[in-house]
Each structure stands twice: as structure tokens, then as C-alpha cells.
Image (cartoon, rainbow, N blue to C red; front, top):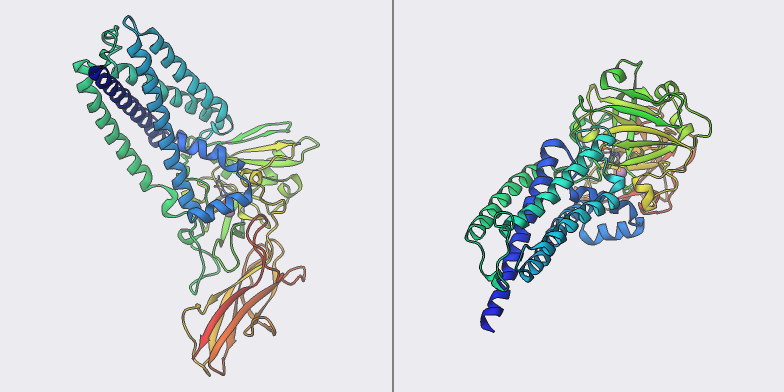
Length: 518
Ligand SMILES: Nc1nc2c(c(=O)[nH]1)N[C@H]1C(S)=C(S)[C@@H](COP(=O)(O)O)O[C@H]1N2
Ligand SMILES: [Mo]
């Protein structure tokens, strides 16, 4: 009685131990392939598979609850790591149970393990199919699919082998007598924990390295405030990414495919692309998640090949509805064919005279003026022409349907915290942006919007960029003032005052600033 209960405990202990160690080995394989080859890891693939299925309003709510996009991503990674370990341990327990039932060759246990490993792999292939092509070194999706499939196979097989090792089933080929799951072979008892500790150390080292280059350090970087300049320096350009680990594309592994409904599918190496006639175009980008007054917007000069040059060379067939941009991180977005043929829609490879920084899409990204930053796909890898009404990563959540940038304006100076002196001149400054419609005027109110005065445009930019404005104000009396700003776009339409949140079509309303005059 006592011994069998004891035996059960040890059987369970052994099963959990081998399941845990095997899960660690599996993790080690996955992390190693991610770190050294840029193969998509489970925690990225699963997140990328699930994220587009979350309805936009729920997505916003979840982000609110967990305190931001970055915490949500961290939670996602941790959940997947915990879940895959639990699955691994459960596999170990079932194996152990079957193993301890037999007194000959543990055939049932081994059969189970083979089915478990193969089944998990097939299930992964099936469920993760749409994102298996992720390849963070920038290799084509076809290569990515094979690499991911092979890596997962290796990882799961390593898991299975570790379980076998843990039970000595490899060396002895013979199970121990019934009930003696209690007696662990001396070798297994000794080896398994050591293997576990080594695997844990290895996984820890890789996780730390990956954490060091993760997007947690820079995702959501804003550009705003008193020192905003007309052109945003590359290292201060706002950053938004769906990833926990951004692609680190190798120019040599990279190619750009143009396919779908075309007469002449095309593949460009980087040198082929840069050999084409290029233009420099200043364009401001803004994220759809940019709240009124926020800094998820920046302006740069992009060196690029107009997309229509590439589309023209591919001989588009008739009936094309959408052009889909696919990226190395399995991100995608779409624009109408007509917009794609607009001469200002660009395939860009330089930003402010330098090669594209890694965070901004190295080596090649889209620049789509007039529409939210979502459409300006980074780490571009494939352009697909289709007659379908294809939907992009965020579009699938239900963002949109319009992605046209509404007119935005912002007060950058003074800052809300610093009081002004009564009777003294103060300079109000800020930006205004109206997608690809240009800004024809900016007005400032120091009375919460009851009266408006014209601000001076100090940097006019172009139709595709923001403007910088200033306004000299001499507050006469001490007190609290409600400053506000509004812009008029190039079509003569005054920015709407109606307040709208970011989901699902971007925020609107006037930026107000509460200023104390003393
Ligand atoms: N491949 C890829 N492209 C992407 C994204 C992404 O996550 N992956 N994010 C998009 C979003 S939401 C925005 S707002 C812009 C931001 O570009 P930036 O980081 O260069 O400012 O990139 C877009 N392109
Ligand atoms: Mo965005």
C-alpha cells in the first residue's frame, strides 16, 4: 500500500521531470533556430496567427486592461512558453503512465509518443499554415515555410527523444517490471537533471540575447514636443511594430517577388531595385493608433522606386482589385490598384540619405502617402496583385474600412506643465498634417475654441507632409487658458472638432492644452 503510493509519486515525479526537461530541449531548438537563422519561433507564430482574429474593439480593450501593446506582447510570449511546457509535461505524464503499465518492450508508450510528436507537428502545420512563411532574415516565404516546418519537426523530435532518454527506453530497450517505475535507472536519474540544467542554461542565454534586441525597448517610440524639427532624424522617427522581435533582414538573403495576376512575374535582388530610376520624396507617416496630440507620426525624405514602375514591368492583368504587400514577419497590408499606380506610392530603400534602419524596414519598405502608416509595410518581401478583396493584418481585426488620414494638428510648445508669465510674449508651436491633401492653414485658439487666430506656417513642407506652425501670444491676465489648434487641409476642409477614438478608423478632434499663466 505504502510502497505503491510511493511508487506512484516517483512515477509522477519522473514523468514530470522528463516532460519538463524534454520541453526545455524543445525550447532550446526553437530559440537556437530563431537566434541563428531567423526561423519564426512558436511564440511569434502563434501570436501572429491569433492577433488578426481578435476583433478591433476587443483588441483595444485587452490593450487597455494589460496596460499597452508591449505588455500584451509580453503576456503572449509568456503564455505560449508556459502552454508549450504544460503540453510537454502532459505528454511526459501520459508516456510515463503507459510505460509503467508494461513489463515487456514499452510498445504502447512509444507508439503514443510517436503519435503525440507527429500529431503535434501536423497540428502545428495545419493551424499555423498562414504564418509558417515568416523568415526574419528576409528569405522568401517558400524558404521560410520549409525552415519553420523542419525546425518544429526537429524541436518536437528532440522532445520525444528526450522523453525516451529520460525513461532509459533508448538504452535498455526494456521496461522495468510493473510498479517499479519507482526504480529509475541510475543513469537516467543522473543524466536527466543534468541535461535539464544545461538546456535551461542554454535557453536562458538565448532568451536573454533575444530579449536584448526585442522591440520592447523601442516599440511605440513617439516624436513630439518642443524640439520637433521639420525632418525627423532617423533614430527618433516613431516606431510601431506588431512584433516582439523585428526582422533583421540580410540583404543577400532578401529578394522582392512580384506575382499574382501578372503576365510577367518578377524577382528583384537589392541591386536590381536600386539600379532602377529612383526619386526622393518627403512624406509624413502617421499610425492609426495615434491619439489626438500624440507623437506616433514623423516626417522623412524617402529614396525610392515608384511602385508603378515595378507593377508596369510585371504586366498586370485586367480585373485587379488589390495590391497586397507581404513582409518577412508575415505582416501584410493592401491598397487599391489605383492607389498602387499613383506616382507617389513608393518602394523605398533610403531614409534621410541613409539606408533604411532595421526598425524601419531594412532593406525595403512601402511608403503609401495619404493612408495610415499601417499600409507602409516594412521589411517588404513580396507584392501580390489579386482580384480578391484581400485584407491586411490589422484590417482583419476590423480596423477601417477607411484608412485615409484625417486632418490632425498638435501643440508641441509650450508644454502643459510649465506656466507662462502674464504680459510676456510666448511662442506657441506645433505641427499639422492632412495625409496627402496638404495643409493650407492652421488656427490657434486661446479661449478653448470660441475664437480662432491664424498661426504662421514656418515650414510648409509639401502636399504629402506635415507643416510646422508658430503663433505669438501675449497672455495679458493670469489664470488658466484652454489652448487649442485646428488645421485646414489643401481642399479647404477644416479639421473636424468631433471627438473620435482611435478604433477603428483613427482618432479625430482638436488637441487642447491647459496652460497656467502667472
Ligand atoms: N512588416 C511590418 N510592417 C509594418 C508594421 C509591422 O508590424 N510589420 N507595422 C505598421 C504600422 S502599424 C505602422 S504605423 C508603420 C510604422 O512605421 P515606422 O515604425 O517606420 O514608423 O509600419 C507599418 N508597417
Ligand atoms: Mo500603426
